[in-house]
Length: 214
Image 1 (spheres, rainbow, N blue to C red):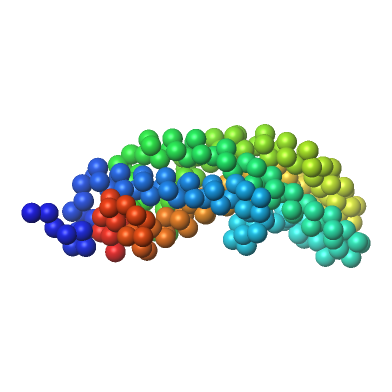
Image 2 (cartoon, helix red, strand yellow):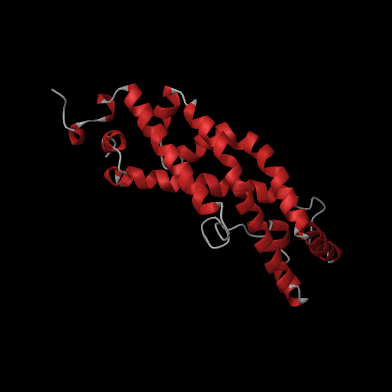
């Protein structure tokens, strides 16, 4: 006789069920994260993932505002987030591939891991290829919007004031890194929701697998 779902523990689940359940959860999480972030204001209006100025600019922000460059800084922030919003939809294929090829060991590590286990999995599997995938779109978006020229002009003013180190922030890398961080964070947020209330996910398998973790 099969024990009711609420009486199961993780050790009672088959490796196949555990792996399938986790893959389903991650696919749902990735889809929701892409839908939330890959639209206008997906980053800009979300305090948890909004991309701020590179540290090199932040250090001199108050001086720049005092010089009347506050609007330029605001524009720069907006366009960096717009570039991120344009790049995120490109992640779907690679995220799906990483989930589909997940090993049983990967699944166990995530199911038994802490709050950052999902972020760590996706970072290990997709950070390098997604960086390569995102960079041209981020670069094109920033270039099209004149953001790189804007940044260089602002950075030049800071450099002249001795407020910017020689190793200036690379704007494309900054935006790409923060885009990935925001994407992984939101996937992790969605997975945590499923862990906290597996029944609400609308899947018997998810309820079975994540119910066993409670």
